[in-house]
Length: 284
Image (tube, rainbow, N blue to C red):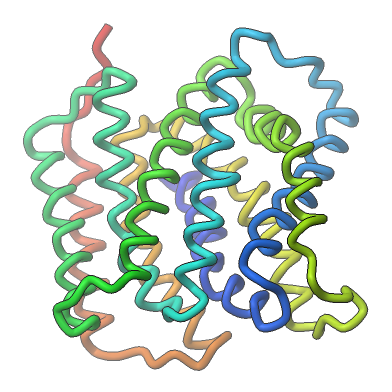
């Protein structure tokens, strides 16, 4: 759970960093450019670590992970962040734990107990309620983009965690990025519309954070946590992510922290603690 939390803490800064990066860059280049830089870092890691070539039988699954966490999730999140706030967006992404747990149960034969499902549903329901309260009871276009991002991310998380059972988690995300590198090279070139020399220091730092941490290093910890603790259980740590994001947004973007935020944060953390205690078994 703690290893997974480190990954989630890194991911929690993704939305605020995205908003900052898009002060000077378009959402498409932020999505593809960060994956390009992360891919180059992954090439360096694989060479230095002498990881060797990936087995051909794992390539299809690695491409599924790439579809989820390299292409689908970043692009949809960036489009949603054009007009939406990172604080509100973080709450919609709070549905990720339930989506990941469901995929873990169906795709990878995990069998959470009824108590686990109850705690997971309660936690996710709290997130949705919070979203409707802060959004005036409406589901906006940006929210639908974030719902789609949740689906892509949960696919990438569960498939990546499955691969991490047979491969080093660092090698998994590295090959995911390397395999998608040719596409990201082309798309980054086509979507670049600004001189990097004109980027502000703030936007540059945010973009580099997205590339090295959100797109790469965060997965070292996240996949390791899912591998060790199980997809369904450790995925519940994600329920804390929206509230860490809110705190980060208050510092980086000046978003207001309210009593309502703190109340829901406390309730959600309690559901994570309860879910952690519930039995989860792996079927054959």
